[in-house]
Image 1 (cartoon, rainbow, N blue to C red):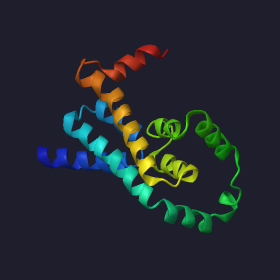
Image 2: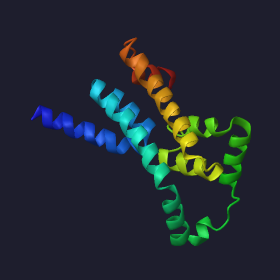
Image 3: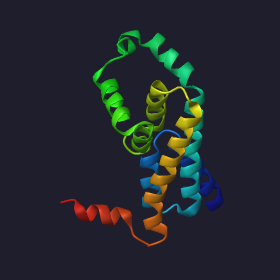
Image 4: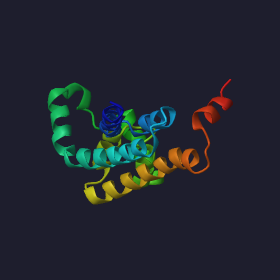
Length: 156
């Protein structure tokens, strides 16, 4: 029974990581899911990047057709903010924010709006996922730091 529960929890981690990488990374640490959970989180995040990069054009066309009023104006406050990030930090800035601040689909769609080079988007996003994975998991596994307790120590 324990093996089935482990497999199921790692599959859930993998699937949810395709959308919300940062949230799941903190959950893996908090739930003490170990190395299999960590690998599931990283693989899920990277798989999400590949999937959403490939379906970008179809998904955006569907959203525009389904919600025309919401997506009619190409220049909103949100798109201006993203253009400012791209001008200041480039595609790497959007990729850096994607796993933690934005979700993977939102970050990939924004990045694909700013450049059509899928390979460049994938490379930047994968590097960002690996970086944030290292930020979450290296202190936990290598230095045995309980990140949740450490973060709570800063809160009132």
